[in-house]
Figure 1 (cartoon, rainbow, N blue to C red):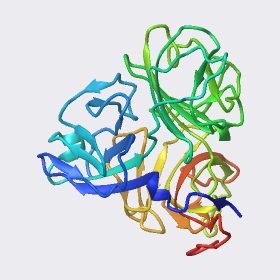
Figure 2: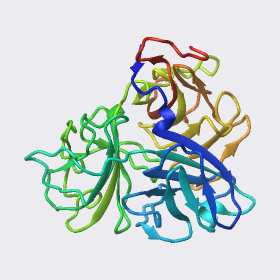
Figure 3: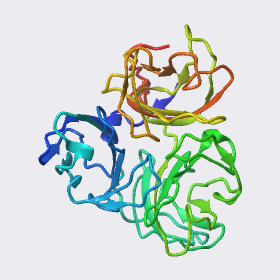
Figure 4: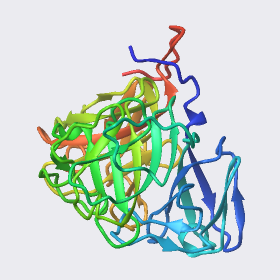
Length: 353
């Protein structure tokens, strides 16, 4: 059993839905001031909008492009104590369109752990020692094999890094790639690449992630942001599964919690990053998904792949390349709605599988 000390995962991750109004509006009910917001227009083709407190509410990245950060004061105006306030721009607030926002809490902005090897000093950081999530901002050193502190206190299982000062690929480290030379790119659907040119052939440890001097992650004088996550019992799980090709009884992935959010991607060939959550239609047979690498509107209808959420894991439906082709490897990121077993030993399942 995956025992959890986080009895209320929504204290650290939450999904919000809203309708656009082409004016300003406050999105409340998140439950905390978010430090990282990932928003998307569901019923239209506006790009994904990624914002964090370190770069400020008016500084936008788009996961489906390699574009530099865009300053725009009318997309998201402020991070608030229970959510955020939107401006009047189409990206997140156009009349007649629906939207989703995925929200993470970090919050600690002093006392990051470093050691003698940490030779990139973050220009800003916010981390959460309980939920094992951090946002780190830095200026590249140009040192090949540089050490960057991540603040998690344990080795990260996922790192998502973007150069913000110029156009450059999003690069993703994921424990499920099973190699300290492998990476994926969030802004496209390409298969994994294995090369020593990003992570310096070094596995992240409890203090640092190691970076080459590649322009994607550590060019001298360039600005970067990184989002770091680590497996946390009962709250977040990142790993690898193989599809079984069985549409009647598809692969089941045990997480130790009922998921609130799942993102998955095939690693051996090209196909999209597929995103599901427990607020939109798109789970347990309803047929809806978004794609992190594309600005397309939300897929709807039974013809599209869905993802079933259970009290202790998830099951990507169907039997094709998207999520469950026989013998094909997939990586995933999952965050909890409810832990399956609390630290007291009390079970809190709904529908187990």
